[in-house]
Image (cartoon, rainbow, N blue to C red; front, side, top):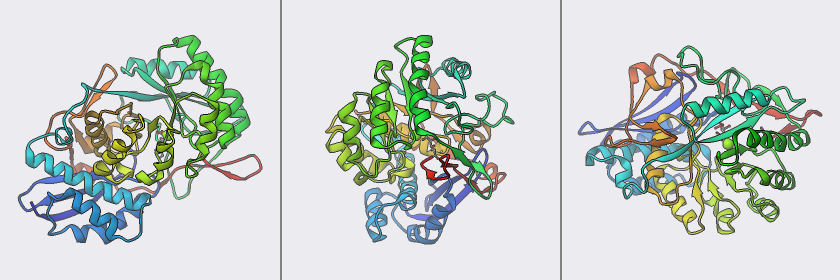
Length: 412
Ligand code: CS2
Ligand code: MG
C-alpha cells in the first residue's frame, strides 16, 4: 500500500472546497477534507508545495507515523493551515485503511457506541415570525434539536441569519446559510453587544412559549462577547434551559471561561476555531466547557480528534463537532464515523450541503428521525466525482467581518 499519487482538488459547487485525493500503487483511493473557509488557497499551497511531494512513496498503512512526521517534521507547530493539511492526509489514510480492510472507519475505531447521531440544524430569522417558521421547517425536515439565531433590532446585517428561505429543494436556489460571500473583499456587518444582550433572552422566552420546554435549543455567541458579557448572557438564558451556548467569548484566553462558569450553569460549547488539543487543555482540565466544538477537518483529522475526545472523556466533556456547510461532505463523514465510535458523543451539527455539492461528493450517510449515521461502506463512504468537481472552479470568497458603530473592528 504505497502512495503513488497525491492530488489537491479545489471545487466550488455551492462554496469552495479543498480535497486531498491519494491513490496507492494497488489502486485504492482515499480522500480528505482540507477546507478552511476564506483561506482555502493557503491550505492548497501547503499541501501542494510541502506535503504532497513527501507523501509519494510513503506506506499508506502507517497513519500515526505519518501524522507525527507531518506534525513534528514541520518544526513550526499548530495553526489552522497546518492542521487542516494534516487532517486531510489523516482522513485520506483512514479512508484507504477502511477500504483495504473492507470496513467502515467507525469499525476501525472500536465499532459503534450508539445507533445514530443526534443532529441539530440552523433555524434563524430576523424577527420571531421568521424564526418560528424556520424552526418548524427544520422540525419538518426531521430535526429534533435546533440552533436558533436571530436578528437584533437596530442592526442591519448579523451572523447566522440565512439570507433567504431555507432549502427549497430547488437545486438552483442556493441553501444560503453559507456565511462566506463570493467576492474579492470581505463584506462588513455591524454589531452592538448591549442591544444583543437585551434582545436574546426575549427571543428564547418566546421560542420556549411557542415550542415548549423539551425541544433542545442551541445558540451561537460566535466569539463576540467579553467574559463578563458572556456571563450575563449565560445567566439570562438559564430559564430557557439551552442545550448549549456556543463560543460565548473568544477562548484563546482559556481562563476567560472561569468567569462565565462562576456565574452560570448554562452548558458551554467552545472550539470550532481551535486546531489542536493544546487549545483546549486548560478549559478541559478545569471543566470550563461541556462540549468540544472542533471539526475533524480543522483539528488534525480523525487521529488527533480521537485523542482529544479521549482526554475530554476524563472530564465528562462530550463532542459537539462543527458541521457547517464549509466542512465538506468528507469532513462531515469523518465526524460521523468518529462520533459513532466514541463513548462521549454529544451532538452533531448538520447544516446540510446544497444540491450541487451533493452531486460532486457522492455520500452514503443516512439522515432520518433526527439522527445521522455514516453508513457501512468501507472507508469514509464518500466518493469525489472529479469530473463533476471540474465544473465548478474556485471563486474567491471571504467570511464577513464586524465593525461597531464607532468603526472599531469587532469579532464576527
Ligand atoms: C458557525 C459556523 O456553524 C457554526 O457554529 O460558527 O457556521 C462558522 O460561522 C463558519 O463555519 C465559519 O466558516
Ligand atoms: Mg459556531
